[in-house]
Length: 270
Image (cartoon, rainbow, N blue to C red; front, side, top):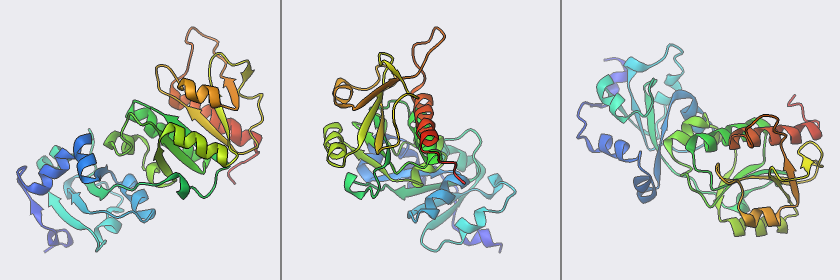
């Protein structure tokens, strides 16, 4: 018997474990069970490196890549591991090119009080598209933020497409979900400036001082930040637009602002 044959083989789409994995694509089921899906080797490695627990791991050896890094996951003793044939695995996979690894894991919920550092934060208000939220998480990780605060959420943080777009960086930094008013009060209490980007601002984003503790606030794709955030912001900046478009994609704009802060603080990452 090969090492992989020690794991039970699932062959039916009517198996309760398989049916649960399929249902977890839906927000209602994720909210009901407080579980979510993580697919892909890189995402699962980053999840495990952050000491997050897995509940169930489905594997399909026929779809494994050639790097053999899957073995680290398969050696875990704290997770139920099941083999699936390729046809069944593709039923539970939400990727066009699955790599044979998909897990069910408990959600993790942090509070504002869990943020240890407040010098460099991102506030994302009512982001609607999972791809944008995932990209904001990825850029925030790259820039080394102290935390990301998701306010008045539209997109479920544990949406499989958020996990995928973030490339697993959902697990590499503190990510908090909180109400807008609660977050505003907390930022002010902790002496954190709020920076808001708007096409109507007088100053360009490179002309304001970002060396003090600051939260970069970005809003929904269509209308940007709500009036509450605009009124309460300490700094308002614009990103120059030289073509016919009047705004950038929210994830792109966030990335520009993050790296301007790094430039001003002279952080090279070395």
